[in-house]
Image 1 (tube, rainbow, N blue to C red):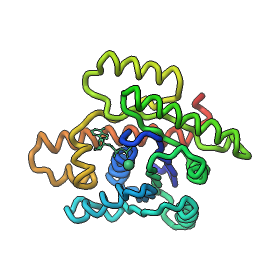
Image 2: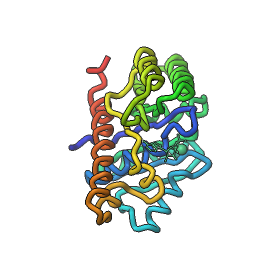
Image 3: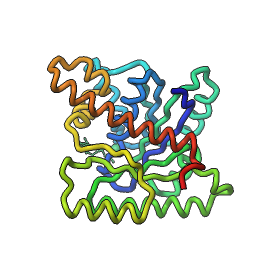
Image 4: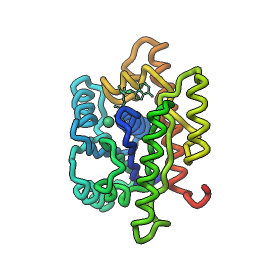
Length: 241
Ligand SMILES: Nc1ncnc2c1ncn2[C@@H]1O[C@H](COP(=O)(O)OP(=O)(O)O)[C@@H](O)[C@H]1O
Ligand SMILES: [Mg+2]
């Protein structure tokens, strides 16, 4: 506990790689820990904003979590500056993007402590992920102090219980090319439910069927493990090669 203010930018050019799902899962895990969470939804489809509205309507929400929609990267940077001035210094800030990896997104990268690029185990996701990493490398070449730029990690998303040969090959190619988190998100019905109904922790508490509730709790645990790993990377970036 006590990670302070962290800004996580979730980015991948690939639509449907799980950017919004990852933001929601991390927000859910942080809320369970009693942390304040702000999601900046910079996608024109308002995916996370609509998620908050659906969650509030369903009663699956927490006052700890707020979603702010804006397409203006400078407004996001400004709002982050205001969060730094607040009393509450335990704050997870997530930035959901529409795809990104364009120069217009550079402002967001500079405001972040870590850039996380979720991808599913497909050839298409891998090639878009490599493109997104390419944008990051070029950005490093553009900024004044590249050492101060947030680090970039891939997160495997929607990993099935049984990984096929093709999926294994994609994963191996990824591990050879880019830094990836050790933790990942599995292919879980609980995330689909979260995407429709609201925060995982609240859904788990309200699910009367014990087996179902246990499934949702497993997703909370899994998302919490991912959040832990990201927090560790933000706290001690120098320890990681
Ligand atoms: N780990 C997962 N398990 C099950 N379904 C998932 C998972 N991650 C994403 N999905 C589903 O995949 C779809 C695309 O995810 P989304 O987060 O909207 O992608 P993006 O924001 O990158 O476009 C959504 O329908 C979402 O519910
Ligand atoms: Mg999205």
